Amino acid sequence: MALPSWLSAECELAYAYWETAGALWDSWRQYAKANGAEPGSPAEFAQIMERRGFEADRFTGERHRIRWGLRLRRHPPAPEAPIQAGGVG
Image 1 (spheres, one colour):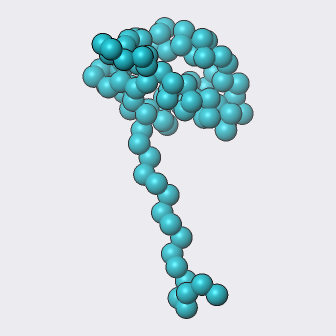
Image 2 (cartoon, rainbow, N blue to C red; image 1 turned 45 degrees about the horizontal axis):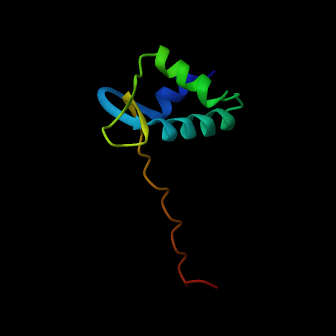
Image 3 (cartoon, rainbow, N blue to C red; image 1 turned 90 degrees about the horizontal axis):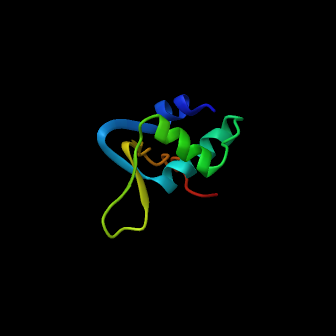
């Protein structure tokens, strides 16, 4: 797995950060496929994340599982194409 490159490119690491497990899996799956890697299964991904020290947890009363120690980078939206002089033609 190309997990170290995904962590570097797509995640911010810090003890107090957290992200939902579903969002992490979706990000990893898209990244792996875009880079020609096999993402594996969600269960395999969860095991690897646990071995790397990203502990699973749930907030009290919440259904979503989270992982401590990282969060996804929030990429700014792509800029819109500038409007050509003279308007739409």
